[in-house]
Amino acid sequence: MSVTIDQENSLTNTGSQRRLFMGGVGLGLASLALVTGGSTAFAEEKPALTDADILNFALNLEYLEAEFYQRAAFGRGLLLQNVQGQGHFGPVSGGRQVPFTSPIVRQYAMEIAEDENNHVVFLRSQLGNAAVARPKLNLDTSFTAAARAAGLISAGQVFDPYANETNFLLAAFIFEDVGVTAYKGAARFISNPDVLEAAAGILATEAYHSGIIRSALYQLGLLDQAKAISDLRDAVDGPDGIDQDLGTLERANLIPTDLNGLAYSRTPQQVLDIVYLGGQANGFGFFPGRTNGTIS
Image (tube, rainbow, N blue to C red; front, top):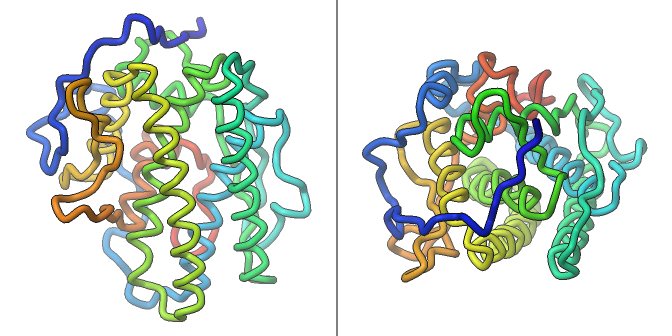
């Protein structure tokens, strides 16, 4: 059974406006399984990472976002010439064009899809022959696993991110904040100032995307659903409690920052824990065969 999130019956979010720490996520046994089944990626940061390692890590994430948005906006994936390279090359399961009813949301999807495609092409051009191939991607059952763990659906139900624009926006919310924090966290490992400047440019674009998705969800009143996804990311990526929901109807939290107004960072390990949905216990989430490259 496929489930559509009912935006008309969404409840007001009662979470804190800017969460710095979480006392507990209360997401049930599904989330506990994700946390305790954590990924087998490196347990601590490796100081010997090269700029190419970082760009290839970013390329894996851009493959995921680009394939998701390309299918949602246009009903097609990336060109074959833009997905081949080093490491294991894999297919993409799931994905189709969303039957948008709002011309505005359709425009959001189309513009973001084009940006993500351009990110893939740009990173591959910078890496040359060192660029990794697109690994195997799961764009169907991974969303259902995430939605169940977040409490958006119950066991036996299916979450289809392409069924309607509401589901599409919630699915996009899983990725967007992660992309911003991933680039921010990786910046400290980049040694070449030209590479750092390019990464900063992509980070800024991802932040624009995140702002669009967060604003759209807030305008639709999907505060509880977004909070459930935010709490799940926090549960999976460790005890820091850095993720932030959309705030309340009385006070929005559309720009997730710390008390200094700075975007927060995630380590590569934390990013992997999210996109792997906790690790082997959940089939490594969106990357069934894990990512390609040194950071995997």
